[in-house]
Length: 218
Image (tube, rainbow, N blue to C red; front, side):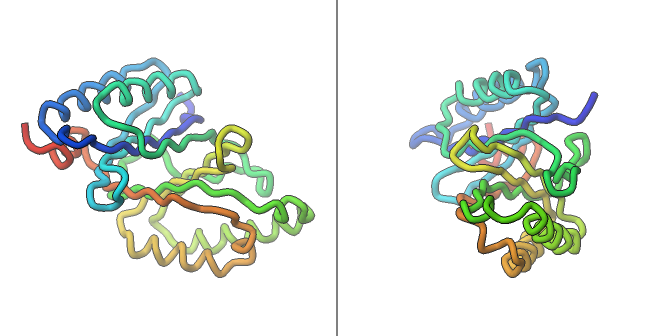
């Protein structure tokens, strides 16, 4: 089957008094039900404990259409967890290169860390000539390709949410990822970024490992 075209990242918080093995079992059951939904390729689990104040656990849902993504998300939200951030979007071809801005493969082994954030371009960006925008985005891509081992998932969501794009990165080295972001901020396209927060970080593990880390041993 083709690569999933709809991806969503749900970062959730554990309500006070619910950091218990009982809640962990409910979450584990919810994730398993989400994975069983037709049209859902996979659901990946991440611990965000200590990385942000507003969320504790993250899930990446990869689906082939919006409806199965929503059904999977519903199973996760039916647990005792509360939504902190929900970022989603669709894979599309770039208007500048004609290719997808995605190097991540869902069926590949996951890297140790996931970094996700939404971003929106300024109004001035869209008033620039297409060729000028293309030139800047090619420079942006060249810088990014210089950091091997960091994989990208670029999602389009203009008109569908409060931002225009969602980007997810997989990496085994957070310091190297920080170096990549620093390098990208010196490119010509950077002044045309209106917003690129919140930045959500999670450490990947099996469902059982993440539940144990977040909720304690059963």
